[in-house]
Image (cartoon, rainbow, N blue to C red; front, side):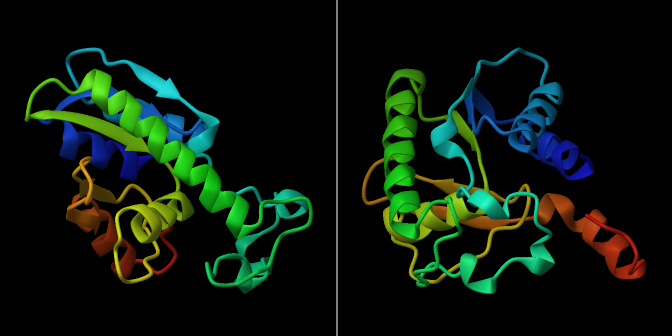
Length: 179
């Protein structure tokens, strides 16, 4: 929650006109923390297209017990009753189209910002398949990426966690601290 509060402080002076979020609790809580840092109310729209990859029968399993190939995008591993990479990437393509449709209707000026709050694998899929980022990237919680909506999608900032520096410094001083 502290990461989300830091994110809200970082973004509070941007001209955010709408917030799009996954319908899962963690992203909604992050979006709410950003909204609480602002003086004016904003519309928040949820969509299950922005959800993390569906892990099927592995849901609720500790990350330490996950098969590592589950996170490797070139793996053909499909979790039992979960999404294949192919299905996941197709869904994320539809999610991006949905984001673009909201951008068209919400963004009126050059300073307007559409905030999208989603999950790490979703951002990895967008970065590699839509934004044409050449390297595989593992996104940090509450990291900021800024991308132009017009194709080709110019990446201005990717996986930036500068708003978390104080938390990261505290963690390095206290190995038992958790972010």
